[in-house]
Each structure stands twice: as C-alpha cells, then as structure tokens.
Amino acid sequence: MKLAVLGTGEVGSNLASKLVELGNQVMIGSRTSKKAQDLAKRLGKGASGGTFSQAAAFGEVVFNCTHGDSSLEILKSAGVHLDGKVLVDVANPLKFSNNKMSLTVSNTDSLGEQIQRAHPKAKVVKALNTMNYKIMTNPGILSEDTDVFICGNDSAAKAKVTEILRWFGWKRVIDLGGIDRARGMEAVLLLWLSLAQKYGFAPFNYKIVRQSA
Amino acid sequence: MKLAVLGTGEVGSNLASKLVELGNQVMIGSRTSKKAQDLAKRLGKGASGGTFSQAAAFGEVVFNCTHGDSSLEILKSAGVHLDGKVLVDVANPLKFSNNKMSLTVSNTDSLGEQIQRAHPKAKVVKALNTMNYKIMTNPGILSEDTDVFICGNDSAAKAKVTEILRWFGWKRVIDLGGIDRARGMEAVLLLWLSLAQKYGFAPFNYKIVRQSA
Image (cartoon, rainbow over all chains, first blue to last red; front, side, top):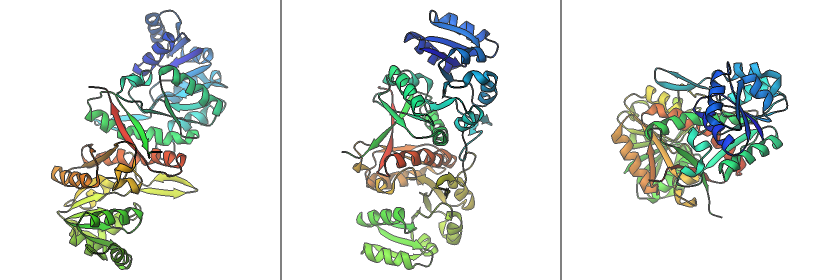
C-alpha cells in the first residue's frame, strides 16, 4: 500500500519503520523534507522522504504523527492533498508548562474533530494515540492482549485502519463511534501521564474487562 | 468502623448497603434526612439516616456520593464536620446537555481538587469514580481482576481507603499520587461514556497491562 507518515519523531519513525518492514511504499513527510529524507535513507528500500505536502499527495492512507500543537498548521500545508484520503490522527493536543501536562483542546472539542472540520473531505480516524509508541506497532510486547481504540465518521476508513492495525498484531480493536469520541481518547492522556510517571515510562496499555458470558 | 455515605442515589445506596453488610455502623446523609432515613430503614441494623451535616459528623470516613454538580454546595453544608476526616470523593463533575456529556471542570483542575481546596483540613481521596456502581463494591463480577485508581495528598488516608477497597474485594489498587491526579481520573469519564454506550451500560472496567517481567 502507498502510505504517508507525517512527522519524524519517535512516533513517526517507529510507524514508518514498521510499515516499510511490512512491505509498503512509505513516504515520510517533514517541514523541509531534510529530516524525512534522512529517515527514509536509514529505513532503506520502500521508504522515501518529502515535504508534508508531498507525502500527503503520495499516500493513500496518511498518518498524522506531528506534535498536536502544530498539527493543524502542518496539515493545512498539505491541504487539498488530504481530500478523499484516510487520515489517521495519532497526535495528542498536549501542552507542558511548569512540568505539568494539560490539553490545548478538551472536554467539548478535540484535536481529532478540529482536524476533521479543517479537512471536511478527508476521512479522519483517531487511533493509537492512547499509548507509548513502542506498543503501537508491537502490541505483543505486553504480557496480555490489550485494546486499541478507534473513532471516525467514515466506516470504510475505519475498516482500512483496522486492517493496518491487524498487520501490527492488534487483535482487540474497539470502534467507539464518530470522530467526536476523540474527546475521550485524548482526555485519557491525563490519566496516561500519571501511570507513565508511576511506571517510569515503561510500556503499558489498557485492557477493557467485561462480565463473564 | 463508623462511616458516612453522603447521597442516596445508586452509588450511595450501593456503597451504604455493602458497608452495612460488612458490619460497619453507617450513617447515610441526604438534604432533609428523609431519603437517608428511608434508605437506612431498608438496610436495617447498623444503618441510620440524617442530614448531610449529621452524617459527616458521625463518620470517621465520609464517602461523597452526591452528584458532582452539587457536591461543593452539599459539602459546604457539612463544613467543619469534615475537618480531620478522610473524605472519599466518588463523584464526577458531569453535565448533560443535548444528550452530550461533558465535564464542568477538567484538564487544569478537577472536582477532587476543588473539594480539597474548599476543605483544607479534610483528607480528600479520589476513588471508585471511574466505574459503574455495581463494580465498586463487587469487582469480582468481572471476568478478570481489574484496577481501581486512588489519589490524594495524605498517605494515611489513602492507606485507610485502600483497606476499605480490600474489604470490597479489590486486589489491584493503583495510587496515582496527589489529589491533582483527579484530573486524569475524572477525564477518563469521557472515554468511559463511549464504552458504556457501546456495551449498553453493562459493567466493565480497565485493567492496566504491562510488559512481562
């Protein structure tokens, strides 16, 4: 599949690496294309680098792995190239000040919804934002199967993202509904931080447990 | 133990019932004492009813099971009787409008912190707010052991609450830190709602899964 990964941080690098390993053609995007090209060189055959806009134009599915506080501005630069695409929003609207984390948008709105409103012709699917980047593409490192949440307004887009999640090894994919459910998926970062600090940022994830059948 | 349960809704009724069953002396509190006395009569020996203020005066540990949107006002009426007490805050600052749920305080503050600030001499411990009331006192109804989170500024108070949670059958109690961690514990309700709607409000809870040792 032709895929785009916007962002060259830990999340973008890890996702791009796994997607290349799985045999996809992956274009990585960065602001000036320099960092994306450097990363593509390291990842070898199947990987290429370009600007955010070039990468968005290339991918059938586009992963937003930019920092949440600049995602809207970066996606704006990719503009029309996102129309009709499945846009997987992995970002979180995090802000750090005085060693405290908060969200720049929350409760009655979310980054996922902001992105969907800014790109009404893109099919935004929020996914993978609730966990450490190492787990995203390798859920098997945890001692039990855990859950990955998705939400979005387009069922076919969610089916495509679910397929990609299965490639990574995810067995438990929970569809929470429309893109407004991103409010809950992003808010959970406030709990995530307390747990991450408690565990020294070692990987962990949530498993939803229900009643016995 | 002499305990107080403020509130006669599903959460308060269920907690009071279990605490009486476990052999405690439980005073239930309601606005005019009428509902509390009616409930106490149903629960039988060990239960009594009074106003919020009377119940707070009675209990060594006080459970706030009032609706989050009126908790501050109700606790104000209990005032000085909360000084020195362990105040277990089970409430959530939920607001419903147009069939949408949001939080009345979130992200950079929480109900738990508001209560602690309003009652600086009380030892506020946030606990049990992240789940359906049926699970609170009966975690064994789920198919696996799950996690209950607590937070608060006073270690002895958290130890006492942990002891009570053990009575209920909780094996996995996760101390998240100071009362400011209530932000994450309350924010998770935004995710909880999506899951609860998906599962038709059947009980579920979170289990934190980490890497194998």
